Length: 168
Image 1: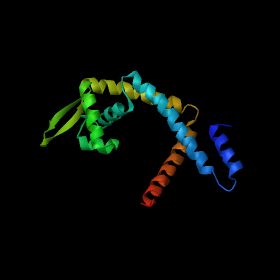
Image 2: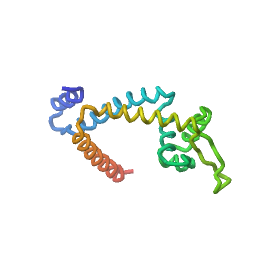
Image 3: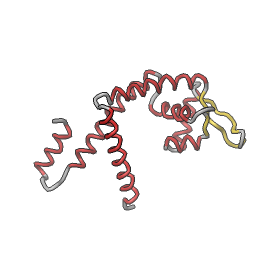
């Protein structure tokens, strides 16, 4: 019995009229998320990064050569607020990991690109990150990991659909 079982069993005794199945699923997903985050943050820290910096560098790296995006493209790919992105870019630029360049197609705007140091760092960090994620799923065989991916995708779609139907 894990902590989530303990909680749902308590509710079962106190409120047998409630079906707490969803509470069990969501509770486990939340606890799993926190456990995964703890381990991934340790990996980021090994490279002098936090999740926010890793996110920007990884977004630039996976965008392909020339590893450059506009701030708007970065915003869309990372889903953070404009001021937050500016702050992230400023910090990464101060660290020498990204550079701002005038956009050759629109001199009123700029592009953000990886420096050589940023490219080398994110390549090392993403390798370690994938290794950490693989280790975190080591308790599942390939079929189980695929089934979990399918179920989580289905649950995410249902939650997204529910969100669009929410009153307000």
